[in-house]
Image (cartoon, rainbow, N blue to C red; front, top):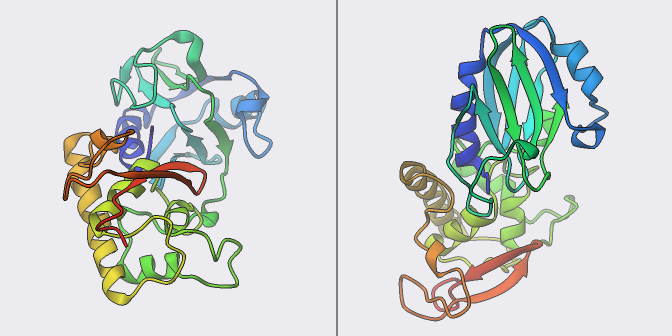
Length: 265
């Protein structure tokens, strides 16, 4: 599933689409657009223009356009990107593992004959012109310890103030980029219970920030969000790689969650 590490790979691949005049834009239907974005609106906004910069904010890919609106691409659970037939990833953990034209949901064709495709089997992604970046929290790859503390604060003025720790960690308006697999790995490394609702101590926040940075750095080198130490044990009967205790599982923040009852407090 594309989390921040996968979308960073998509961003790097999208740089190959920069500086190329756009000929046509196709989107499967209006339901794949967000914020009123339509296939006709995409064609009108992008045709005869060029992408000038490929950016990323959390799990949102942003393609800036010369004298035009920014195009935002969200990839949902199984979305991928291809440029001129090349993909950034061979497969996603929960994807089908194959590329099929029937799952192409959007296509940008360039005057030179090449193209940029959004491939999304489960169709949970979307395209949006001028997405609201302000709604997203600080990017997880560069978040400071102070920003993380503010993002996870149990603050009564926030709508989900009393949410479990994992739900706050995955709330994109608090912190952009962390999804289900990364959240479980970070909390396991930091020794923190994903169901916890009370505020973290300063020492716990430091441990979580260290775990966040280490997880993103190491899993980025390994090849993706599914390459964590905990990943192979996320199943019934799975055991903690640290202490051998059988893992527990529950739905936390709407997502299947695995943790060690012995060292995660």
